[in-house]
Image 1 (cartoon, helix red, strand yellow):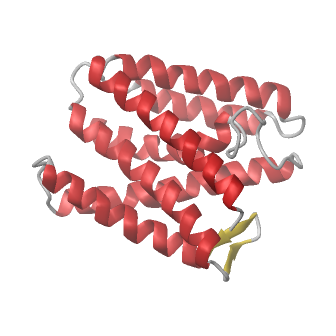
Image 2 (cartoon, rainbow, N blue to C red; image 1 turned 90 degrees about the horizontal axis):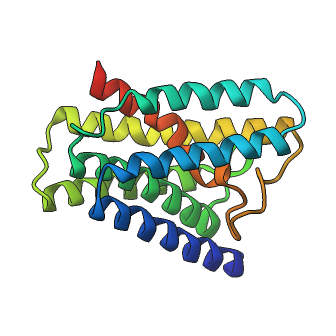
Length: 205
């Protein structure tokens, strides 16, 4: 593992997580505006850095945003949404850590750094930690909860692959160099963009 890059990722992940949970603790409705800012940052990256096939990534971003704004943050349960965010974040972190540390079996050509070991490790750890957190905060754990958690992880992985495909089409390593160790905002929130569609569908339908 490239430990310098890993430490940078860890440091800036900690900063983002701290900012997010601080905002959600102070006033949960502010989370909506924080995430809108993230969408705007990704929009800017696509417009200025994606020279080819720009329309499809923009449509993807718009569709994700539409599903996001369908979520009623005034009626949303604080713990449930933060558990969703926690699941996505832990999958992203541990699939990277396990993949870099133990990954040998390549998973998909679109994203050559993805490994089977990273996917399995990230899935298992994220799933286990999500159940533990739900139990700690007395969130009801039933079949519906378990299936939702599994599908959030699957959609987070697909979101990562989708962004990798867009970058590959544009011969980009990262969506930008804004965040040391991560790349750009799109790189950091790729798993969120697709998984939020599932979460919105779950809440509304």
